[in-house]
Length: 322
Length: 195
Image: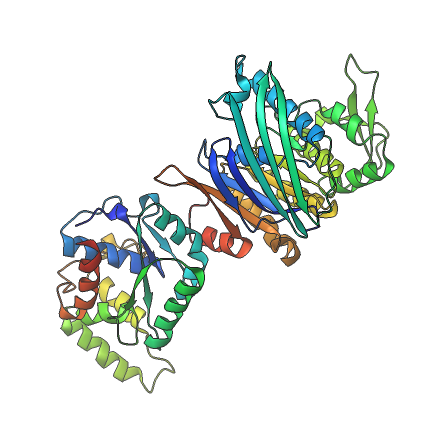
């Protein structure tokens, strides 16, 4: 965990949460829980940034994706925030290793744009804002604009290129280089060079699991020392590849000091997450959590955080973690 | 009897969970067909495993359910009770507990089950066998081994699998006196909560 990693999250009136406290957050966090239980909302709340312009930019992009996905045209901002009122306000409280911050926002829908009354207060906080959208929503999938993201995030930077190669090498040990080919059809494609092979192969020939993981690795390298949020992280990953997938992702997050928040519904995803951590050892295990969002009978939602020891024991005793 | 869904049970192992199910059905004359569904109970794998169930205890309380924890006293009843009291206070969780064999003595659940096993002739054979092997073998069979052998002796070989699992063992009144006074502390505990 580093200084910019979130250690606890407190939401007030954010989307379906009246109050939600998520405590004891680690560097690697797998969120579980029932459908409509708030997992995605927790990911979205973590888009919060001290500067309104940056937070607004991210919210607008998420709202745009939401609008496209749902087809909702009228009052979509209120629908997105799960509120009926003409004005809405919410608070996102975030604690870090050395400091805390509270973000208060009142929102008005002015023809689909957010008009804000944004206040931010922080206590001894060293915070690095991240302009790009550090969130992969489920409904967009991993494959969306992979080449563009590579070109935007990695291509120009030699250090990021090296880190991406290092991370990809955990699943493709003979990888030599990655090149964007701008001349192919109307959209450029990525080419993967391998040691001992003269011709580079298009990324598309490597299979969905590899491509999905590759997409995620680009994000991890780009959001170095920050955090990324991934909805339904296991989608498109064959179960027999799941452990290798987790080994690659966790190693990349560790190498790039990235805090990971991911959701799943899948028991196998949880099982292989634990198995990968078992293989990676104590340094990784100490920073791993499973956060279960449980809806109680009174309809309130509460977050239950399990440490590696807790969830390993739960898996061993066939306790439901989803 | 209150619906079983009002409770969450915690057992050290599947052996205890199965005996408990059969005993509950006997005492309350009810069919617990849904036993084990929707996490009616959790296995803690030893008494210390209850410490790993803080989230489950809290969730259950939050859902308005009552937690009942069952552990063995083993070699020191007081030590086991102190462990549970300390854990409850430190973790700030709510539960009531029953310590086998009878909420006061040392020992384990197998002790009380063997005690209420009614085929005394067979139990005498075990006693003689134990006496006989004293000088021939370095170790005596443990209570679990005796109990398994007792049970197995009344299962027709054609119904036997290679190794009977804990879930397959039926605690029927032909073999066990589930109304015995030895089980009264457990009965009283359950009636206090469930009846």
